[in-house]
Length: 241
Image 1 (tube, rainbow, N blue to C red):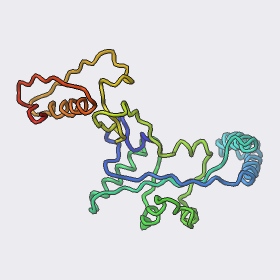
Image 2: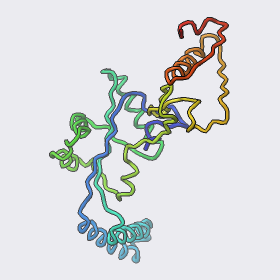
Image 3: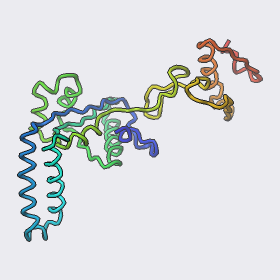
Image 4: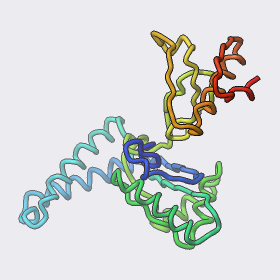
C-alpha cells in the first residue's frame, strides 16, 4: 500500500500534500457468504459445460475461483469483507491546485492497478468516514447505497490496510524522515547499525548545505554525551559553538 502514495522508484508518482488514508471494513456473515459462493459456483459450473462458455470463455476461470472460495469459506480459512478505501487530501483552497493534487493521487494509485473515483458533492460524507467510530453510525449504509463499497476476501483487504513499516534506522540521533515521511534517525555510532567503521565523506559545491548537514550530526553526538573535534577552515562551524 505504501507504494501507492509514495513510489520509491518513481518519485513523481507520490502525493505531495497532507492526506488521510482510511480503510473501513465489515466482515460479512460467514454462513450467508458460503451459501452465496455455493450458488455462484453451481451456476457458473453449469454454464461452463454448455455453449455459453464458447461466447464467454472467462466463465471457466470464474467457476474455478468461486469453487476455491467456497472451500476456504467452508473451512473457515477466509471470509468475505465489504470495505471502503478513502483518501482525503488537504491542499490550498484553489481549483487549479486541487485538480493537480487529485490527478497526482489518481496517477499514483493507477501505477499499481488501482482505479480510484473522485467523489462529486460527497466530500463531507467521505471526510466523516475518516473520523473514529463514525462509519458505524449509518455512514457505511450510505456508502453501500452509493455503490462505493467493494467486496473481497479478507486476505486481499488486509493488504490494503494503510500500514507503513519503513526502517527507523536508530532509536535516536539526527531526525531524518524516510522517503515516505516516516520517522527515522541517523546515528552512525549506534551499535545496532553494525557499522564496521565510522568514516564518512560529504561533498558538494559551495553553499550546497554540507555544513547544514554535518552540524546537526555533531549536535546529536554532543547531546548523547559524546565529543567532537572540528578543524574548520571556512568558518562554517562558528555557529555550532
